[in-house]
Image 1 (cartoon, rainbow, N blue to C red):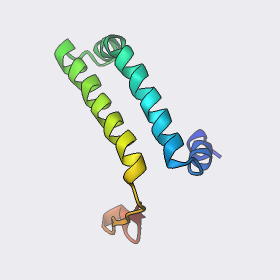
Image 2: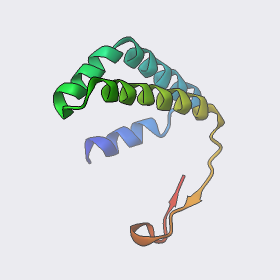
Image 3: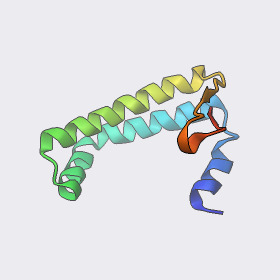
Length: 91
């Protein structure tokens, strides 16, 4: 079993509240270390500082939205029945 599969098996049983709590902790960590994350992006990808800062800012927005949605998500199923997704759904 791959690390991703092991993580999926562990996290799939977490309650919505536990997921939200962990996402909020991750948000706080990234927010506190924004400059370090932006500096890493600049060093690793050679992006201009403003672009790297925008990436970190976007990541924070995604984490905030994911945290809020973790309590609202009600099991919606979206068909992805096209190409390599034939016969599959996203939930």
